[in-house]
Amino acid sequence: MNYPSKVHDVLRHEDIDAPIFLGAGEDAYAFAFCEHEAIRIFPAATPGFVAELVALYRHLEGYTFSFQYPRIYDIRAHQGTPYTIEAKLPGRPMADVCSQVSAATRQRILQNYLNALSELAAIELVDRDFGGLIPSTVWSTAESWQGFLRGQLDISLRHIGSRLAEALPDFRHTISRLEALIDGPLSWERKSLVHGDAYPGNILIDANGQIATILDFGRHTLLGDPRIDIAIAIELTEMAAGFTPEDTAYLCGLIDQDPIAANACRAFTAIMLAAEYRGDERIVQKCLGSLRETVGRF
Image 1 (spheres, rainbow, N blue to C red):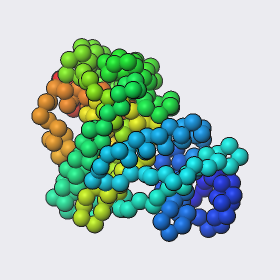
Image 2: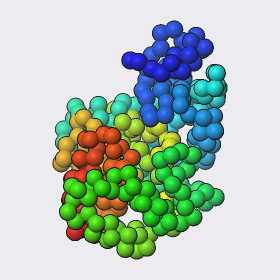
Image 3: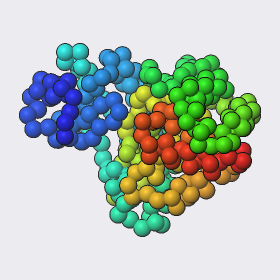
């Protein structure tokens, strides 16, 4: 695998001559460091970004979860490239596990997946604005959740609104309806922790089908309505190998207690993701499909 030159520089600096690759997120590359530790290198991040990430993980230490999350032992830098020494975390990638099990077992894992996300939702950070938690160019911020939704919707529409309008004849009506619901079913008061990128690639499973680890908090992490995490799970789970449209339908069925709010949140999230991943045609098409499914249902 080819890595950025800054990654190679850090590996050489730490005398890692035969790196064992563990995985990569949008911000970092992870390698084995020793038997129980990993090194995570952030070739394009600033030290401030990593410091904010460390602060989040240290805040999480005040809570008890059924799963593990990254635990950072040391923050280092080499020629301006920040990197961390962390605990190695248990589990196998969720998509790898689910590609080898029955539909019934997969559904049990998906239920455990949503249960783990609900544990994160119990965390509240009252001293920060709604929206993007760690400085990034992904999510905006606002003093209220309604303000975040309005601002983020405007940003998303600037990026991909014309494309969505061409594909969906009722798109403008959909936007008007979403705007009308922002102060109603889409309103939210708590600054709940929302992972923002908790798709199967960032979830590790243990041998019993329980969630072992949630990885890759970062620039997509935000404060606000935890229904966003569930909507992201619905949109992106099917993008991973091993999952089917039936799995998506099962996830949808788990959150239909308030159908208007659930469908409106799903449509809003589909627009945000289509804008964020507008260079990935598979994700854009999946989001378009979700918009077609939800139009008229909120």
